[in-house]
Image 1 (tube, rainbow, N blue to C red):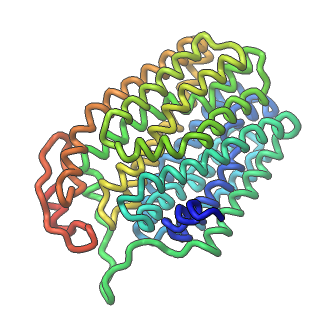
Image 2 (tube, rainbow, N blue to C red):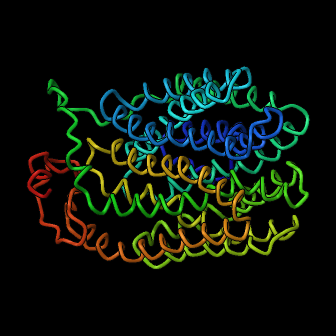
Image 3 (spheres, one colour):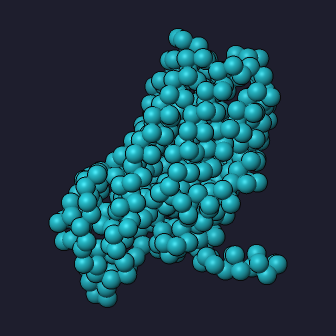
Length: 430
């Protein structure tokens, strides 16, 4: 290994790198959800409205999974949540092709969403456990880079499988879920911060999470961005199909997204992460909105691929940065719960976005779909821009306690050690 690469690897602990490897393996096999609407409206002969509604049911499960996975990772630990989520998700997913009715499919998809999304806040919390604050922007950028390294391969592979047999999608995703679980079992210890010797672990108080106005505003911005962003993975294949482009072309468009992030995503995300409370973040959200709007006149593979370049530039500069901000906002004993709110906002976007996009696409056409999606993301860009001054004031405080009302000043509290804030101090601040 070259000395510079060896030094870069040595800068992070081995369990972190094993989470990165597991993330790559899992993302390479994440092929069911991108093609679920096509599978249900094609081989299973459900209507477009039913197909997109089923994807929204996945989002409903993911919404609950974010909260549940975050709370459990603080309550019982990161490792048990990872194992339960990755191992358990394969069961309902494997049953979807054999479900006899739309009601059964919907129930299984919701259960799949709940279980498969529980691991995300646990991983985000584990990264914060393993990596000091100064190294987290690059650590989260590396995780996101691994996700998209898998995305550079997975969707194209999924498109080729879908043209031959949709059953192969379910087999591939089940195998990669199991492989990630094995990696965690063998190579990732528990990372949750320990209590003092002999001390009883305190009860998880979610009051500070519920009262944190800045966290709520950030989650709303993520929700609006996610509703628009998820059109790219649910209604975009339907729009491309209406333009006479097969599943493989949709897979190649998503591969353009993943390949671009693999090539330049890591330095871009790290650069923006070091400026997480500055102008690059709302600019990134605005680029996502622009990429969505440019799809209004797009009707060829080349045009869709060009749009993917634009919205990918925004994606790579925004999505990896948000967990860094959330990690800075959270106290040690609520890292999982704070990350759970962030991931739950993505789950809610998955619940609302596909059904809403399907209704708009079926009733009003692709121009209304992409125009509306771009408008929502543009509102999110404005919201992020308005939030940044509050975050700058908050992080400038020596202790920057997490639970503060949006727009209020941040009084200091007395830390209890290791950069944490006392439970009583958080109550007073809240």
